[in-house]
Length: 395
Image (tube, helix red, strand yellow):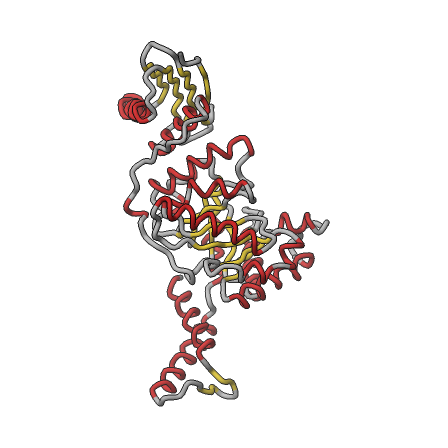
């Protein structure tokens, strides 16, 4: 005989737009009873009930009371919330209910892709997911770490998984920030099979942290027959991490970038983060040098004041002058400013054109090196010039 068990999932209240609240009671008899409260019940009530009935069949549930308050949740959110409620009632259930994969999200990425902007989205806030790609960030981060409360981490895993499978990213790089290890290793099961492009590894303090993630990903790729490349962006957020920056940056061929998180770093060294940034100059310069030495991209921290657009622009220009190639964003309005500030100037574009033209002429003559004035121009300088023109064309 099944013991009657009640569980809840989701968020309750009209302020939780695009979400839902579910009470699930597993019973011994009485069949399936679904009570739905929704403003869109007349249009989508039957479709919502169909989702829950199909999932009950999948989990072989024949007797249950299901109470749902819907605040405009999309199907992947309804599915994730219901799955979590079912598994809270029966923790032994291991099967996952995967929604159909959106073919628009089957694109790949490249290790050297431009990563000027990456937009953080809390992994337990589904209302932010559908339109994030419309703001044209270079990358969208579904966050399982700091923006998700400890009590909601498991629920966020399912929401992030379903989002990776269904929500259109509009060409943005598909990123997930996992939790600090060892918890983050458990997160990987919910993202690796679903065409994630980049895994952000928070609070990274040694190359071994990266290797642990790499080992778990390789294991999961074999289990789920995953063929796509998955790259890593370790985030350094402590004094120890800074001292081990090059070790971390060079620890895996799958590292594509190295980032810094200044809120935790400044707390770790016992100071306050300021707009001037004197307290973090050493750390940020170390990140740039370590990343460049390892041949990957240095990525700056987020700018936390979303209302200070001028301050953001100055921060990006400073980051660019130090050698950073990207910056984190916590609000869509920051994306355009970040792209504009990282864009090459007219002078940089003209200089790049001259370099490439001179190098191409030298190449036709069989020369590997050419001089412009008193400066020697070789392949690395040409590559930088080519990147400047690519950036210029993206504006």
